[in-house]
Image (cartoon, rainbow, N blue to C red; front, side):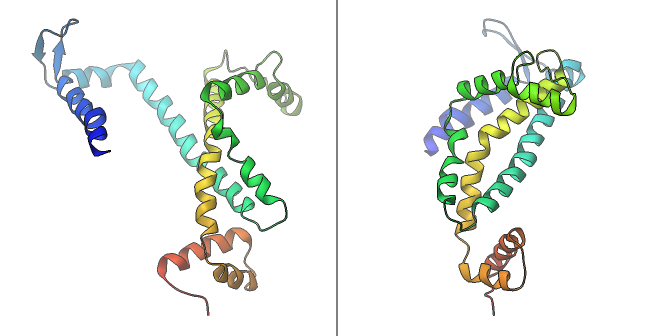
Length: 198
């Protein structure tokens, strides 16, 4: 595993960093050292700065919104109720879909002409959602689709962590009047600090 990481990740990354200080001919047979000129040109390029900002917004949405929704669903799915085991299994299916199928589902669902999601959004809020012509809506569309695609993966890890909590801690918190969200949060703290309930 270490060899794979070294050969396919570390070495190419180091080589790319080294070549970034040179101007290389199209054939790759000539190199001219130019220092940080490539970096200064990149920072001064408005298209690059716009791409960087869009990527940052996309990443922040997926990380914060995706993890928050996944944690909320995991806390709800962690309830010990009859039939919830079936729902827990079904929660993983978005991640099991291929990226192509997930993209097709969202593309058809939010199609501005006949998509059920776009039609319902228009009827409920009066908002005309057209990710094909609007850059802001396209970014939101891609962020929502990617978040949905990763929900199952995140939920499995959150659910595994919640189910590994000692039942004594959860019962003690429940007797103290804590809700499900507070019980999960308090039990994690107690487990991390090594305390046991009285």
